[in-house]
Image (cartoon, rainbow, N blue to C red; front, top):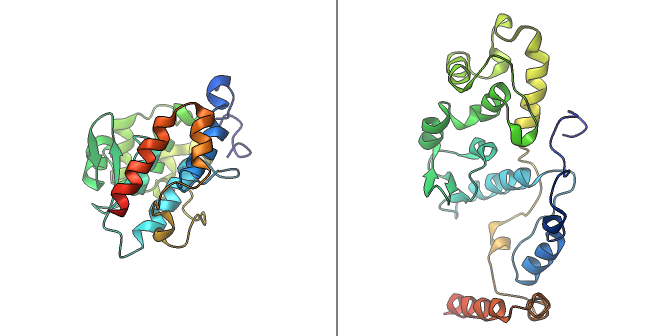
Length: 215
């Protein structure tokens, strides 16, 4: 996406102390036996979207919960089967919840963000269009590709670019079966990892969780 739009978000501005924690956190999670998907060409949101798509296609999965309030991920919600969990807001948004919050159905979220903009991703949106007018236009015409030429005018090409930026990729081959994600306990490397972090409580809590899992 950075190659597509120069103003798209980058890693610039991240506090060095926070950035330094990324790799140790990945290593610790892997040692704890948690599935980790480091993203290079794609973004974390693309991984979540792809994982939600793969899991939702498995008949043994009762419900897929995406634990983030990020509005980008609202496009992944599907009825009551794939929902978005806002832990801080203490809300679980199904498709109806997304419509209540944004005024459009989940499938139109990329179009909505295209029109109103997304400062977190560096997308300015289309001048003169706010949330209310964006929802009205989308509910009237559907996806921006179907807008009458006069609606976007000279901004049409720009809007289509922004939509491409706002549309999450769902084709990342992260895993084949959800059983691969099942937590089976920490690896032997986790003890050393907990010691390195100087917090042996992590190991104790992990062992307790593993015991409960086995019981």
